[in-house]
Amino acid sequence: MHAKSSFHSHDGPSQRRSNRPVSRSHQGGHSSPAPRKGSVTSRLEDDLQDGVRLNKFIAASGYCSRRKADELIFAGAVQVNGMVEHSPGRRILTDDVIQVEGQRLAALPTSFSYIMLHKPIQVMCTAHDPQGRPTVLDCLTAEMRRNRVYPVGRLDYFSEGLLLLTNDGELAQRLMHPRHHQPKTYDVLVRGTVPASALATMRRGMTLAEGEQLRPVEVESRLQANGHTRLRMVLHQGVNRQIRRMCRDLGLTILRLKRISLGPIGLGDLPVGSCRFLSAAEITALLQAAEIRR
Image (cartoon, rainbow, N blue to C red):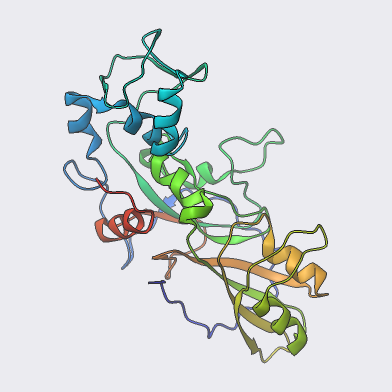
């Protein structure tokens, strides 16, 4: 099930407008309370008291999938407190030190946070930018940053829209894995008219100039009153800057690119630069889409 979004906006060319981070939490109709103990957002606290299975700990850290964690454990690549551990079911307590392939894993958070951000343009999808440009973490409230969330996937510097941030490593790893890839819907404003041949090429799949083969893209086209064309595009694979590269190869100029949904989660009317915690229903839908059972 994909979140629906209106296809009747009159947005004009706004690609270079400045949307600086405002670090505010949206409290509108789609807002939800901060995660509470006992909800699907924070079940780890009880698990940590009783010990977490080693393979689950590794997956929850975001290092790899649980299946891959099993392989690494059986291969002798995992140490617990300096000793090689071959049992995926070993219970890990809060003071245990875990190393995978020589890399020490950080302790798991006592609760998971799931945050939706309407990323503005000219904001980096990183925790820190060497050039001093604003990052998506600058858009979050202090409460949201406290659990050390990080972005799942990315939107490029001049793109805006829905971005998910979480400290749930297993979910992040699943959502970025091709096997569990979630459809992503974009609202794209293109200069002038779009030839029918270009739409047909997108719909049947195309090969980028760099040689990457793309799957068919669902695309709807609507000519705007200002003479530009609005496209609603649904992607079914994770290729870096896919829409921009497709349009480049088809001779189309993008004026605005906005992600409006990720799998079952929709941006709705969340203002640019605003963020909110996901609702319990949205979190459950994401976990189900990623085939995570807790």
